[in-house]
Length: 298
Image (spheres, rainbow, N blue to C red):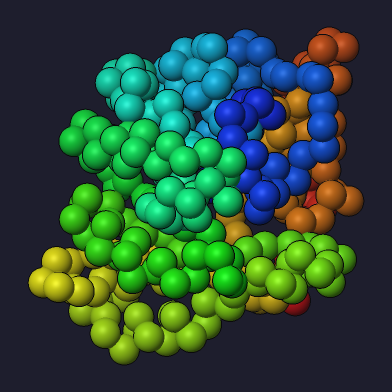
């Protein structure tokens, strides 16, 4: 285990139809700053080196800058995933608090397509946030684009050009669902395989790098004379993806999960902590979750 994906809130200011909500069920519980800090220290002692802060929308949490500051003293890298709506106003504070880099969700620059996906037309706020994050050195800035058939699959080339100009990495992400969810009409209507796109990127790549996490391939290409890196995230039915997973997940209500798609192995660590569990007892819960890890796609 090398990284922890840590949700700090379920609150969000968008209503994205494709959001998997980190696999978390609705809950009124939310870990405090002190509880987050304690669980972070325990996970770091088990070899977790990196943490990615997520939500909901993490920038809606009032103490998010202090959360970053607390975590940056524990891990070698703290990053954050955001929808970008509030990012521009937080960049300097987050950088000063120790944030290393940021992922920003932007599935299209077209206002109407963005409204269809996210419920608002305020694309400009996201683009401004990306620009300020790049300028501040929260790099590499990754732009997350979930590709949906018939919605934004025709916008990939435009997003490649945008990221080349912005100095960001484009991360193309397949629409994801569990085995049961993948049989739903909505999933089958909108699932867009990135296999052909990945073959196209490989043909024009100047170089190919591999992300340790999931062994995801990152292709450096040069469209229109500008170099840009495009990373492809293909989780569906991907045995290689699962075989190279080095991540644990923590929900905002303190449930530790070995896998996004498989809830059977998760364990509640917040309730025992609030009932007086020692660090050693909490550590055993972490080890219990780790022992339950299984490749979802085999």
